[in-house]
Image 1 (cartoon, helix red, strand yellow):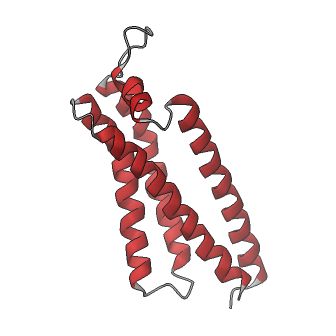
Image 2 (tube, one colour):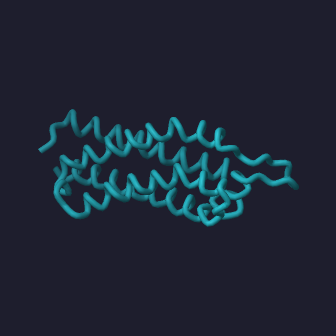
Image 3 (cartoon, rainbow, N blue to C red):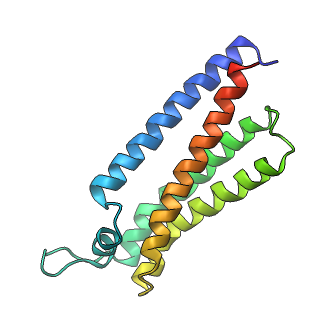
Length: 149
């Protein structure tokens, strides 16, 4: 049974994680947008609107700090799940794969868009929502485990 200091720390972690997810979604919506065409326009540019296409270097500069942050954030959240009843379940294994794979595709799909594989705009949207959903579900597991223990 977790002690009260652990419960307080996890609750604050969950709160800050929710704020991080919400602010990330708001920034994504404002900067890029959630439509196929807005993602293509963001990465490939639009001459009519005087929007320059992104370069490989520019995309790399954006995702470089995110690679470490996403990996660390997912690792910390999944580490906390080890202390719940979900520890040795297939659901936990699925969460691990979903979290890391969705983060990978969310981060690296822009390179495929720049290569001309416009379908990866859909991959970008899907992986973004899958990543957010997986993290939200994991936070729910953590909150529920503290609430009922």
